[in-house]
Image (tube, rainbow, N blue to C red; front, side, top):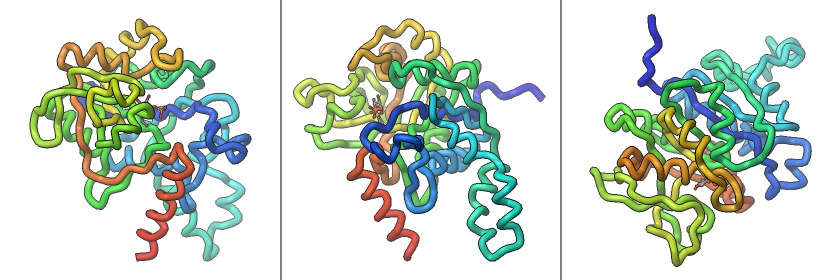
Length: 279
Ligand code: G1P
């Protein structure tokens, strides 16, 4: 049966960053492998993608990130040691993930920004719409996951989608910030987007969080995108080209999001998941 090129079946995980804010913990361990309770951040992201019926995980890694590949693989020694013992249940979740999807990897050779990381993943995605998850934005819901909500929305709008939430105005310089017109409840047709503006220049208080659905023409746009904020190739700038043609919507998702790229957010997420588990 020919592949349905309109269905979201792949999720890209940019995972090449250095994790400087978590040094020394991230000196030899990828930041995506830092655990919230017992589960690495990246596994939360992969499970969210699985919940959105996505079965191909495309991971853009870098030097020193081999622990990621080992994590999403069978450890025969561990399986041998633990099989049939009272500890076997500790492996249930990760075994489940490994059987439900396939993983492919490529390396980002130079660190030239999120846009560049996404472009490096083109070889794993090809010519189809895809999701992007930034694993350090950890999301949780009681109902359907943020990515499932976005995949459902994609069925209706068939264009690129960014997840947004309200932020305090003084935080605008940490995020991509959007402006646009209300399309329906929680959905905004984007007319402008700016990467990490000063609060005085921010077009609104709606910030992009690390969940995207992108149409594949984004790769050609990224190839032509000049370095922007911080001298890096920004996905926000590439999306602006689509937004100018009315092809980007922003979605005010339902659920909670933790900024696990910061120590405060990481601790908050840890407490949240710990309390949730104890209930
Ligand atoms: C990236 C994006 C930014 C977005 C943010 C969400 O920034 O460039 O537009 O708002 O992720 O977490 P980073 O946090 O990688 O600096």
